Every structure is written in C-alpha cells, then in structure tokens.
Image (cartoon, rainbow, N blue to C red; front, side, top):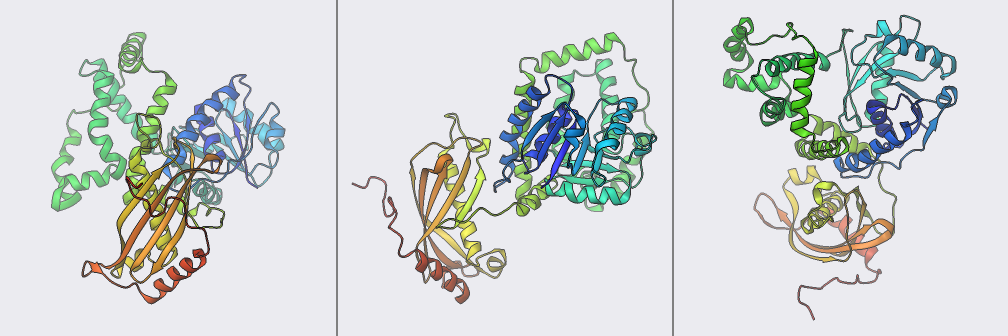
Length: 472
C-alpha cells in the first residue's frame, strides 16, 4: 500500500492530495484550518471532473482520504510526505522538527516551496527535498526536484507513477527554474500596466493569443529555433541577440509596490474576470487545459507525451465474459448543450473499442506499418440511455463474424450501474494499404480473429444486431 501525508491543505496541498488520491494512493491530511475539509473537498470535486478526462483508460480506484488533527497519526506508515505550509522558513523549520519525531525513516519529505533552497530548508537538520509543483497540481505534470541526488531519483520514480513530470535541477538556486522565468515576465508586466501601456486583460490577451500557445508545446528555445528559419538557432541569435542590450525590458528595475499600484491592478483584474467565481474560473481553466493537453497527447508532444506514458502504465480492466475494449471516464469535451454525451462521440468511443480489439488480434502499429489494416465500411448505433461527463464508460466487444476479409463486431457501451447506454454494430474489411484494396489478413491474425469468433459463436445473438434505421 502507498500512503501520502499532505501537511497544509491550501490550493497546492489540496492539489497534491487530489493527484495522489485519484492515482490510487491513500491520503492523510493535516491542517489546523477548520475549513480545510471543505476547501479540499471542493478541489477534489474539480479534480475528479478534470483529471480522468485526460486519459482514454480508467484511472485506478481512489485511495482512502482521511483528515487528522494529530500530526503523528497523519504520518503513520507514510511513503511520501508533502509539506505545503506558508512560505516562511520559521514555519517550515518548526513543521520539519515535528515530522522528524514521527515520520517513517524511509519516507520521502518533499517541500512545495517555490523559492527556498534545500540548504535553507535543512539548516536545522531536516532531510527535505524541494518538490515544487504547479497549479493545478492534479493536472499540470511539472514538479521541480532539488536536493540530495539519491532522494530526488527515488522521488522521481514515484512521481512518474502518478502521471507527473519530475525535472531535477543540476544545482540549487533561489526560486528554481520556472518561477525565475515567471518572475521576469511578472516584473515586466507590472511596468507595462503601471506605465499605462496596457491593462491586465490586454496583457493576458497578448500571452494567450500568441506565445502562450507556442510555449505549451515547444517551450522557449525550440520556439526560437523555428523563428530562426532554415538557418536555425545561430541565425536567430545573430539576428536578435543585439536586442538584449536595447532598453526593451526593465527586468531588475521594479516599480514601487504601493497601494496605488495594487489598487490599479486589482481594479483591472476585477473588471476583467470578477463576474465569475473562483470555482467557475478553476473549472474554465481545467476544461481549457484538458482540451489543450488532450490535443498534445495525439502527437505525444510536450505534456502529451507524459500523459500517454502514464496512460500506458494504468492497469488493464478486469475481464468479463466478453473482452473489455474501452474503460475510461467521459471527458467534458464529449458532452453537448443537452448535458449528455454528444452522438458523434459514441462513434469515437466505439472506434477506440475497435482499435483495441484490432490490437488484441495482432493488427497493431507494426502490422499496419507493414501494409495491412481493417477499414470500417458500415456502422449502426442504437442510443439507449444518457451518458454524462465524468461517468465511467466501459465497452465490451462481441465478434459476430471473423473469417476471411470480414470482421463483424458488436460493441456494447455500458454506463454507471451496468446500464446499457448504447450498442454499435460495425462491419470492417481487411485491406492491403499498398494497393488500397481488400485482401486476406495475415495467417496469424486470421487465426486469432477466428479464435474469438469461435469462442463467441455460442453466445446469444445480440438484441439490435442486424437492425437498420427505419426497420419495421
């Protein structure tokens, strides 16, 4: 069993709790705030809606969640301890002293600090590493690791199992890597607003309508490499390097942080997005992140590669009488204005089931690369019950015919409570991709398909199979 103890249940601590819990870990939370349980419950509600939508496989069953008023009790049997208390060294040192008294000796102690170095965290004798995540922790995979090499390596192995991307720094530095970059952009943003060049909304538009989209998939240097054209990075540096000496930015010249500047920025921010609650903004953020991250998953670019690798490690569904070819949560992007799954995504889901079954019989990426595949020539869908976002969708597949060029499948789409939500009957023909015409499958593939067809031959003919629209 794996257990994570989260100390401090604010935005970051709650995100850590959700990330571990939704990946099957037991989670213990210690936070003296009387509102901690409510706040973390709201974070978990958003996380349960968003995180499963990244994957086309079901996440593990949730672990057990417990809130503790006694730190020693919370630390019992912990594998991972994550400190997310306020960003003050005296508070962190005090918590580390208490942890040292009660924590298992082999537990990893990570600090969510965004600025302090391990040498500062451990100056009183603690053995913490920096494990600095990014909000929302349950969606964004990056976590910066700084500290003892062996501990960071062990931490990285654990974090990968919960779908995170550990980035270990080569040496410690104030604010690590990402926050130093963000701080530079933040400083310049403060000047642009103070000097009346733009508002908070206009500055945000400049980011999200332009370079923010590029950074999401390529980061900074790969983006600039492309900007250099065919000549690459050397050409870019030669062309734009001299700009570094021009007075374009005020990176180390900070505007006075007075009440006037605070009121200016806060007022513009309220005008920009004050019509939405924080929870509404979080859900909007999560939906947009899920959409972009799923798009990147298709090409395994950037964060998409992390999600793809984590998805591949998720456990296979438990077998039934028929093979389970899809077991996943329904993403919010599959639902429409009626609040249920849009009709087009029944085809997408059944297509995933067909692809899985093709892999089961050997028609995988290698087989397709060698020039063979199956093409769908006909589908028939029956919509029987509603499916809604976040619900578990399971598909079982029955082979009605599997001989020669023909593969005739019947997918049953099951919703919560074993409710049959839809059936999709699909007819496929094997093709030679080099000739773009029908052909017999390879002998080993044909044998596996016929094995399934024979095993399913004694099953009752499915209700709805052989139907067509308008049939009497």
